[in-house]
Image (cartoon, helix red, strand yellow):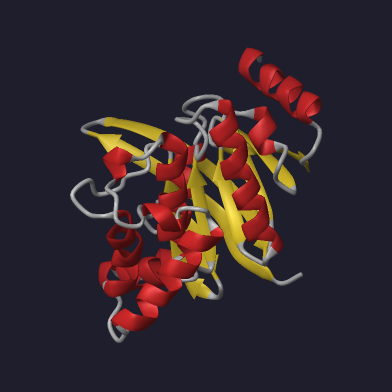
Length: 244
């Protein structure tokens, strides 16, 4: 399969005054087009830093990051923002919806920020996504009127509205009850089955087991990779990482 994402010797160092903290240490990684990868590791291991770098929300201190042959690590802020709007979809643990906008307006907003997008075409795609995700009947409501599971479905639709090259999910089930969490994971699997490339950060072994591959990170380094599916093996390796 074609490599969609490449990280080559990526490092990230955060500095506060005279204090420096290395969040990522020489990370090299490839994601194939159509892959579904879960990233796990103890708190502070570098999971979120990796996701933010791939999403163009932060810049590496060293190394190279490519997404579909575009070199994110070499882009200026304007080019990076444009690339992010066009090619990256984000799903967050706490949804990050705008409370004073309706469900439909929340979903349509990223597409309407793109120049040249016709409102009618955006509305049609938003409606199709809402129908697909089972929230079409909630279109005129506001986020605060919805359950957590419904809000996360809205967030997924918003992330998909621009047909992103890469979908990044940061603890997408972390703020949901078990039933809603399973429904969200089912949606992500369906998206992946239709060709969407997904990278998901999670602490939950059962969520990670839904991915095709699980990557483990500790102290800013990739330490292990294994296939998904086996919840017990994933959970046991996480215990080992935490204890050693």
